[in-house]
Structures are given as structure tokens and as C-alpha cells.
Image 1 (cartoon, helix red, strand yellow):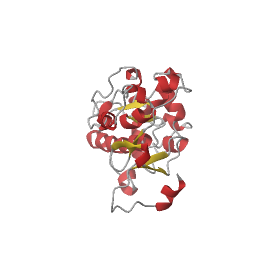
Image 2: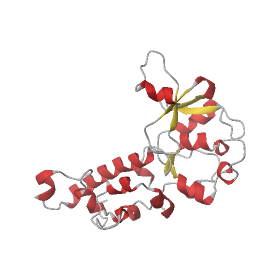
Image 3: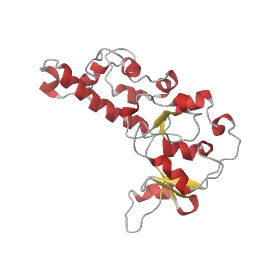
Image 4: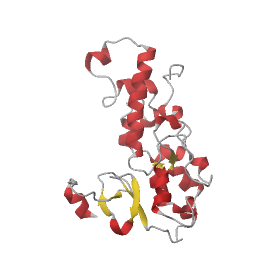
Amino acid sequence: MKKTDLKKRVVDFLELPQSAVERLPTAALELLGSQQAKAEAATLFDILRSSTLGLRGREATDRKPQLEQDARIIAARLSAWLNFILAPQDIIVDAPHLAQRCPSLISNKLTAAGLTKTCTIGSDQSVFPTESVEKARFRKHFWFDRPVWFWTEIERLRLTQEVSDPWHSINDRFVFCEDVSSFKPRATAKSFQSDLISPYRTRFVSRVPDIDYQPAHRLALA
């Protein structure tokens, strides 16, 4: 980021497609601290002045601009913001959640072991045998520790069988379990309602023995 113009809009710097920008909640955009009338107009420099992500107190008001230090601060805050955006899995989606949603990306013969291969760490990894969703891949992969795609683009371009033919039966025998980061048979997993505002707020855990899962009422809601 050292050579980047800090007056550049965050959405342009990250190369977010319009489909993603349009779906970003206003509350998420407001975290970036836009000084303009539109929240999506936030620049990289605005992050430093953001009431939530930015610097505080005298550090924010009295310090002189220091390009290298500012770039590091902005990068750290932007990384946290991106992971906040990733959590609902409705704008940006990672490989295991995408595989559960669109198992046709793997193969017709699904196994828990085969699906769990999508839980790889490494943002530049090749995960799926097909390149059908490559157009929707987040190009600046170094912002994440795993491969991610724009779900909004997968929907807009109808890049998977499940999206292009929503009435097609989806093989959902296996689900991604958040507590062990692997796939398990749906019959042995326990669903729960996360506190995320997302159409994909239902998640699953494998219920590891002797682990106290809290808050317990989340498991009861599913």
C-alpha cells in the first residue's frame, strides 16, 4: 500500500464489483468513515479518521501524516473489515461454505473427505476441479488466508448449477461444521442460528464431546 493513493475509494482499491457494493450493508460501509454524503465513497485515508476503525484521541487529531505507518494501520483495519464482511457469507464466500451451497463444484460423487479438501489454508490455492466460478474470484487474494469468491457475482452471472437451476435437487447429505472446520454427515451434525444478519445464518457444529457450546439457546433455535 506504500505506493497507493490514500485518496482512492476503498471499494475501488479492493476492486469490489458493483454487485458486491450494492449488497454491502450501510452499517458496514459506515465503518470506513466516509467524509462524503455517500458511505461507499469512503477513501483509504478516511479509515484513519473512522470513529470505529480509525485512530483515537490525540493520536487522531495531533499526529502528522506518516505514509508508511499510515499504510500499515490502514491495511490492518481493512483486513479486519474484510473479515467482518466475509462472516455472513452472502457477499464474499469462502470455499467450504461455497462447496456446501454448490456441491456440483466438487463432483457428482460427494464424500465428506472430498468436501473437506476445500477447507485448505492458502488464499492462492486451487480448490475446485472446475473453473466455472473463476470469474467471481476475489483477485486480491492476499487479504485472506483462504480462497474467497464474490457470491454476488456467482449469483449475477449464474455460474453454478445450483444458481442457474435453483429447482435442481441439491445433495446436502454433508454440511460444513464450524467448530472443527470439516464436513460431517448432516445426520450427525447439529444446526444452530448464528447472530449474523444473513440469509445463510444457519450454521452447523459437530458437537465435540466435553465441549460446552454457548450460548445454548442458539442450538435450540435451529
